Every structure is written in structure tokens, then in C-alpha cells.
Length: 416
Image (cartoon, helix red, strand yellow):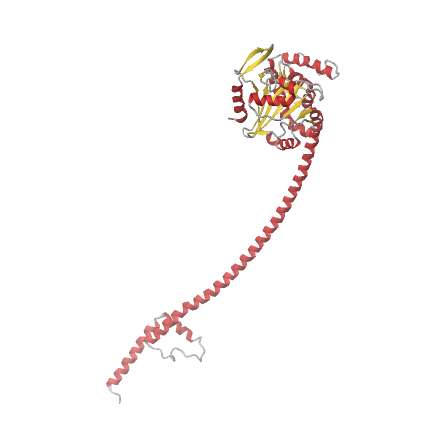
């Protein structure tokens, strides 16, 4: 017979175990264990065979809970590694394709560059041949004193254009016109500055005289030296143009359109008389209608006759007419160089004499496109208010304030 106390103890123990089991059943980890029971092999002990109860059961459940994140983390790590390997493969393939594209572009670029260089070489050789052929038609006059002097001074190309009154290439003549041509990359201008021949100047090695006497005494070299000494411009190159070259140049560009008064028309015909006699042509060849005035188209001989007139407006008017003709020619020159190259070369260059070297002519020709957009500016020296009329040793001359004119030239040419 069991005692009442033993029965009571057994009842209390059963109630405690029931309480613990009810408490465990509420725990998520315990539910996880219960779900795993059905999936375990029969050889594995189930929760009842572990002998877990109470606090021990809770400790076992915590271990299971802690193990779950580790397994998940390992699983995630493996997945991440696979993903990284996949990404690396994609990147590697992308880099390979990019490299191939770059190599293809480089090969194409090298081919294009080689073709461009070949074309440039051919064009360069052709241009050099053309300049050489043209240069060979001119008369080159080497000057030992000026051969080492620069073509360019303070960023400006200076060339003195000398129009002499010789009727042929072999005749020296006098300097009928002197125009300082200054091309400035700083001011983007082409200055055409007429130097009046009646200026009374100091001529090195000679007495004072008119400016055009320097050419008569010592040719273009002495004229350059006289200009440098009296006007302070470092000009060391010249081009001498005779009558025939001037007329041929105008004809090569198809003539020029200029506005003439009726009085100027009369003088054109008068100057044509002499020129026609020199050419053994009928005296009235190229005569203009004496009733004309206004805008008139002039051919080469007519433009030459118009430029030589010094009876209207004295020498100031004559030099202005010369610049008008040259300005009109320069504007038409680019088109004529394309459409009428042979006549331009054959008519002009055999009548030129210069101390420009072939290399200098080539350098200038390569920049012709740039010069074509420069502003063309005309003026003359001496400027108004800086001279007076005088008579020296029986010569009618212009007495000039050279310091004032030097200042003017510095401002006009160099922008100083």
C-alpha cells in the first residue's frame, strides 16, 4: 500500500512535467525540433530519447537556435562566392571585348593617319614644285648685305614694293612708286603705305635728295637703307615691278572696277598714248569713251595709265590711285590663282625682280590663306600736318617731320 504522501508526491511531479511541456510547446525552437522529428532517420534518437527535460531542454533549443544562423551564413557565403565568380567572368569578358574594340580603333586610326600623311606629303611636294617653278620665272637679286637680315620684324613681314618706270625687264628706270607692304599677325592687317617720292631725305653716302633718287643712285638696296634710316622701319626685302608686270597683273585677274571722274578718263587716254607707242600698237588702242564717268571697268593698260596720273591731286592723288588698283587686284587674286593660273604666272612673274629667297616665298605662300582674311588698310607718308612744301637746290620737295611720321608708322603697323 502506498502512503498518501507518496501519492501526493507523484501527483505533484506529473503536474510539474505537464507544466514544463506546455511551456516548451510555446517556444519556436521546440516547434522546430518537433517538425524535425518526422524527418530524422529512425536510428536517430528523438526528443524523448535524449532525456531532455526542463532547463536542459531549453539549453539544447538555444544551441539549435544559434546553429541555424551559422548554417544560413555559410549558405549565403557560398551563394555570394558563386555570384562573385559569375560577375568576375562577365567583367573579364567585357574587358576583353573593350580591348578588342580599342585595338580595332587604333588600327583604323593608324591607317587614316598614314593616308593623311601620304596625302600631305604629295600635296606638299606638289606645292613646293609649283612655288619653285614660279620662283624660277622671277629674277632673283642676291644682296650680301641683306642676306642675313630678317624678313620679319616684331611679328610683321615687311616688303617694299617698287614700281619702276622701265618699259622692259632689262631696263633699270626710276622708282615711280614705293609702297611699304606690312603684314601683321598681331593686328590682323595688311598695310599698304605709299612713300611719297618727293620727300626730302638723307641718302647714305650721298647728299640729301628726293626719296626716289636713292633708287637711281644705288638700286633697291640703297632705297631700303634710306627707308630704314629715315623712317625707322626694319624693311629688308623688296619686289621691283615694271610697267608690263603691272598691266599683266590686272589683266590676269580679269581687270578692275573703279570709280573715275570724267577728267581722270581724259588723262587715262593721254597716258595710253605713250604706252601704245612702246607696244607698237595703234595710238588709240584701249581708249576710253571720253563721255564716261563713274564706275568703269579697266583692263591692264588702262589701269596702268590711271595709276600714273600725277596731274590730279599731285603725288598724293597718284599714290592713292595706285593703292586703289592694287587693292582691287588683291581682292580678285585668290580666284584668279585658281581659274587663270597660267596667265597670272606667265604675265606677272617674269617681270619681277626680288631679293626674297625661294624658302621665304614658300613660307609666305603657305600663309596666303590666313592673310586673305586680314583687313586691308591704306595710307601714305608723310601724314597730313607733318610736312611742308619747299624748294632745295632748285628741287620742289616735301620737308618732313620724320619723328612724327616714325611715331605714326609704329602705331599704324605695330599697334603701339
